[in-house]
Image 1 (cartoon, helix red, strand yellow):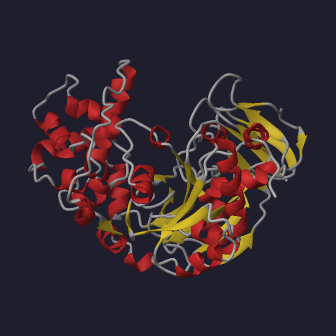
Image 2 (image 1 turned 135 degrees about the vertical axis):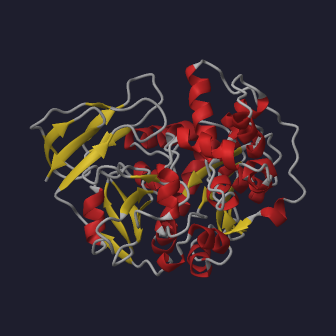
Image 3 (image 1 turned 90 degrees about the vertical axis):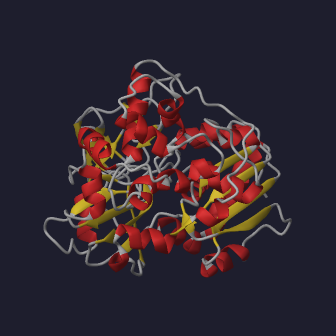
Length: 445
């Protein structure tokens, strides 16, 4: 029996520092402070190699369901769904055993495609509602939350802040596995826990191979949003694409873009009916069109999923994604806001036939040899953490502790300024604050 009010749930979640653990990092208490009719727990984990969410659902399905129930109470939703891939048979069995008997929460089975976890696609798949251009699930009466975030909501209501998370360590490592570690665990420590890399020059990526980013300092710590730490050879296709600068990409586009349409044909947002045409945006570069046009301002509609770059244009190796990111940065700097807000949109009829299966993505990325069993190895403590204070949506958190100060697990160490969108950070180990930089706090146990 849950006897918490919406206000009590939202207050507890804010105090616990819960944010979108799937990568977005949006403060969860803000999401909960809305009115919707449906809440979707996103458990698709569509990025190749990652298994953190799957491990959570298998090991502790009841915690996720409890968090989903709290989210439904907070938002007033009467219906809840847990969206997972249809072939997750063991996870479906674990969840079915603990589903509420009243039918308020149901399982929804997704196809094995990328990016099934994109909330726009998830909402359409589950409810057949299409989120407007530049919109949010809220605009169609839905809230979507990563399953780990919901588990953390359940912990928050019980008084436990976010101090740890499961992380998949995979790729070019000797012992791929899923580990629960304190927030701020150095990347180097995680690689060591997995037995080290297969090659001394391997590059480390925070996140999955499609949307992750290269880690430049292995002494820095993982964030609340770090679902995976992936190692890849330094000459790998994914690494080469990430290291290509925007200036080089512009030159390559002028020379190599043949306007084949593949990037637009496979773009997930285009398939939902949004006015996003990557091949047309690449043409604006080729013809030196520098003034904002609809194919430039459409950068605000790009989800940065990487399909255009890593799947559609894997031969020419061009990156509409990188171009969109640069255009969005330049437009924002000029004070230009998203002008795309159409709601009278329909899906492209070929949507079901243009979904890119995960096996195809794995083959295109050249990571088949890294698809291995990733056993769960439980909780691992560390002697030192560097907790990042800016890896969330909103204003960076500011330190509330000083060097030399003793802290215990769960003590508040930083918070975003009052009145600003942001979150709270807590000590993830017991020890002494040894260093405070602009964007992180180091604690040694």
